[in-house]
Image (cartoon, rainbow, N blue to C red):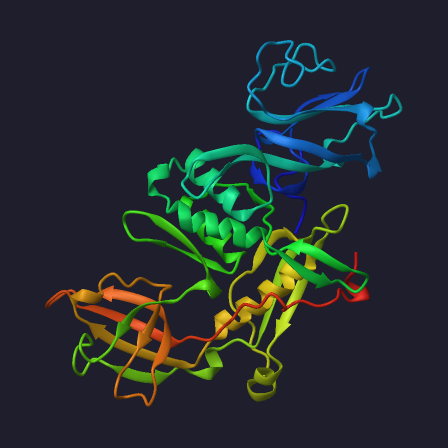
Length: 398
């Protein structure tokens, strides 16, 4: 994991970034004659602030750089987004966050790749549970970041958002939990997001990423898009012999060798001054003893976060990737077509001695016949816990 976004250079694509990042940016001007200076584009505005800026590893005083957040310039002399005094012949670069840096006279061969900074990036709107705007500002809240991207970049109509569910998800992420990091007991937000989009991304990509890093899920029923913390769900319907197609139920087990026993999550340590790259590995010790080490497929990388969030997410994703070995297939009559993947359902059937709460893994409408819908179910087990974190081992502290 290198520096976020792109190293300084010509022709790079500007990032859409949320939260805090260490960024090199894209070089606009490198003035090698006196007075030596650089002008570097950072990302799509409006951004919040430059926290710290370094050149060749040395921190620059605030008097040696001018940060421009990427607002709309009111005029060429706009004190916020006007022409920078270090580059009187340049432009205002409205809507682009950029930085102008004064370099010492001794710097005879300025190197743009040696200029990096830690920035608080894009400002986002906030909304109440009815979807009415209530303010704008910097936020690390995943729900606020996602809705900004959906509406402003994805051009999703606000009428498509289930605002009550979004608001509850926002509050869920901002809720404070307690964490003993080994040095002190800290109060931290349950989930934060520090995410850069450095290439083409779809709304679905963003929906998946933000719900993935908050142990949540989303649903689109064709009318509205809704958001749910995965542990806050309740059963939406009961499948029983009055609506299950006779003879369609199939109860089986998946091959345990397909269930991972180890998962490595990559992130950036939010406690590190430079947001240093870090990893955390979750292990199913009982599963390893029985089946050996089976690594979870795919990549688990979620940007900057505290070790607490990385630890909780790694254990959540390991449980989710493994899950119950039991599977149940069945087909239901048309009255159950409202059930969607991600829902919980209650299963009452004579094939089982007791009622089961099941997670809907897949749904598929049958091509032929009446309005029947097939389901792939798995018995539900809790897989996320706020207490799934621990101290930071001294060997991992950056």
